[in-house]
Image (cartoon, rainbow, N blue to C red; front, side, top):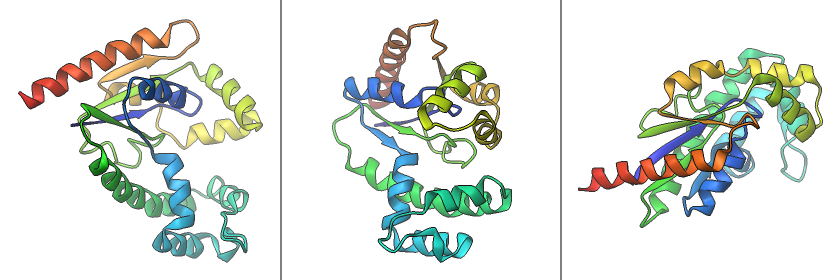
Amino acid sequence: MLQIGITGGIGSGKTTVCKIFELLGIPVYYADDQAKRLMIEDPKLIEQVKEIFGNESYFEDGSLHRKHIAGIAFSDPSKLAQLNGAVHPAVARDGIRWNAEQEDIAYTLKEAALLFESGSHKGLDQIICVTAPVEVRIKRVIIRDDVSREAVLARIGQQIPEEEKVGLSDFVIHNDGDQMIIPQILKIHQDLLSIAKQKTT
């Protein structure tokens, strides 16, 4: 079974692409979503978050005080680095567990915005990068998250440049609104099925 990574800058449309892969029967591990789950379920990670951002990082009911954490993390690079240093290993462990549970499938997808930044691309067989022009991405995130342009630009600044991600990837999906994404996905799907078949023969 191949392990495929899928990444792209914020607002590039990774989730939309992943949903189409799921329709093709491919299991997807959404690393960012699982990170949020682990931050309220993993005792070790919870303790680390409190050490970095204080006990006020969690409400009394145990839910995450996202606004408090984001407000500090995106204005203090050292705090963000500490958070990533705690979260990424927890997600990596959970991803290994999840992948081991998948059976009778040619490949799985691991979706992560910070796939290269976190080093979690290492050990994966192939990488797919979803791209879109920066202005398109900014507009999508402003609408999706109801945030300011400045807030989106700050988040983009935390990620390596898109052209660098493209250069590090094996496949690229252009989600610019002009090119149809389904034919691109189907072509990559067939290519990955062929690679997986070659690997088992």
